[in-house]
Length: 447
Length: 166
Image (cartoon, rainbow over all chains, first blue to last red; front, side, top):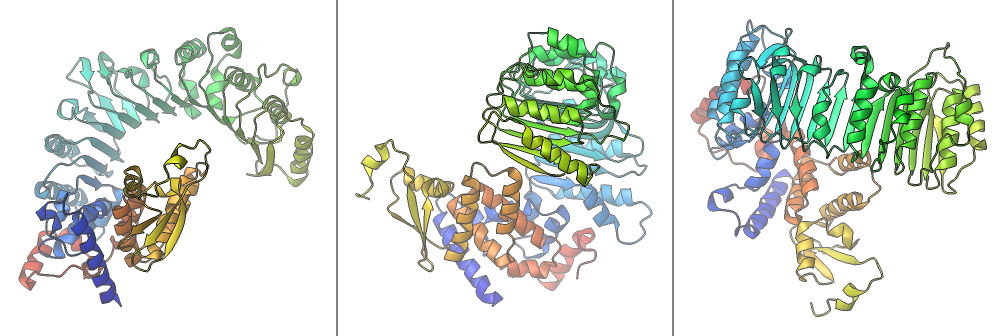
């Protein structure tokens, strides 16, 4: 059976490679089975160890793997090659295998991913050498995932990697001991920084990234030491990373996706957060998606925000709010302010954080006022919301239903803490609410 | 080709146009909405340059494989499908044995459907990654032309990669 299949595959491949003869050159047609471009496609997706093993298939296969343009030495790879036997120096084997692969490699290496295990070793020496080698081989995407106990102190390899388009760094102290002034990241399109500590030295340099479109911080500390100019920025995301230097992003007029989740780092914010943020939000008028968490909304002063008439998110289509607490009037006011500032909203997602039994119901008369949502949400089509069963949550749903004539679907999910009786009570309330949209489907279920 | 309906093209009514794809291996025919079929760059080029008749013959692809390709195109032509839905649907399409996958990757390549080429290549990669090289040889139809000494030398060159393999 398999030999029939084999012949069939070979025949098919042959007929296709015949068709492609015009475009393919002679050396590319030397394989009996799949065409070379298809093999490359597959080998690029195989872990590097298995790709190297294909060198034993036949003479023609011996060096095919060595042209793979992306090399991934991730945690899995490290564990794979150090699993066997009790190695006294696993890091040595890891480093020497990587060096060997680089030595045997031919052609450009566009993407390089490296994991650093939590083992004391002179990583800096090796990484510096590899980066130098990679920068001469056209490296565009570099991703470093470190679990090293003490964050690896890297001097940012800008001078060597001016061609980089994508850079992702994890667990680092980001410092720049030797160069001051403006540092140009000329080709960088995306920069993702995770668990980075920015050394205060870095504050003396400004990074200029004329093409940068995506900038993400996650779990970074001392971000106020990091200065970056990114006029083309489209996505800015900061998770658990307080104190962003906003003044530089004001020139990012193309910003369309903004995501801020302060989480437990909320306490690190300065005093002037409302002024800082409302001034900033007034400048990013092209925003199409906003995502905030309750910890962030908690810090904003709704009074000041409402007074700032200049803020209007006319292009905002998707609003996402996470970890909301509806027993906090400040957060509810901010939610209302956001809804009132976003006349063209199409999609709304709200998730509440679990409340304890001592959640206080507040004075909610403002949620019952008829002009609670001041303008109709004419474009709003889908709403997803989780509830704890607080009156404030239900009143907000009531207001949304009354103000959204184009609504197609609202999904209300109640949290696990809501018991059956209360769940039923919520459903009765939901049924009573008037709906501006005749099309609106209300889906009510446990989350 | 003379029957290429010119006036229909100019008609403003958005009538759903269909194309018939015919497997030349077992003559099976599939009637497909045009916008579904146009995800294949090869078919799009044929239609754009008016080379497509009422029935488009698809050489070297069996009806069984063509059905999978069309399923993929239908899923991805649906504007209301979420990314998650598509991922699940793609996973279902490539949940096949390795030889079907190789037929599928050839079809995706011939019809020039980038997304399908990617998911199928990924699935093949996942399927062969932990296999002994003897099996990989068979799957790709490779004839071993090493002498035993040469083979041992290649193996020794990358001893770290062959640890735990026969």
